[in-house]
Image 1 (cartoon, rainbow, N blue to C red):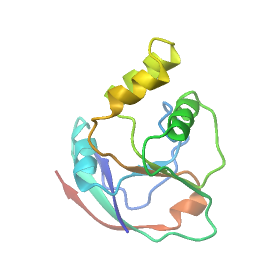
Image 2: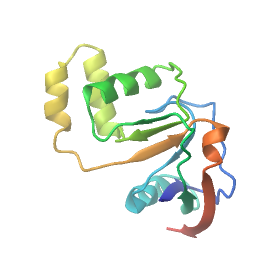
Image 3: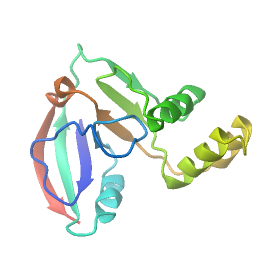
Length: 150
């Protein structure tokens, strides 16, 4: 499977990042199978807009959590990860909580909207995808192919 990573630099050797702000699926190296999404990620960088392309071959021994779509389980997992709770998965894959969706999640967490209202609000969002490699063992399945400027 071909994966993409938007950045401001060429990343030939991906690393599991374990610092900074908490993200949807916790710390790790984030990619997507949607090239246009990686281009959008790259364009958020101040200088140099680079899309890195990787080949990913799934290893059977990896612990993988996959969310096919936004679900109750996905929502609870994203909330836990964004709060800094750790998990033991090698790879987590599923939809992305972009800024708008994250605003709705925060409204839900604060009790300003119900779960039902959350699902109504996110119903019409365009498809997104992210896959995060959470361990060095998982990154062994990712191989750099090329990069290009956006």
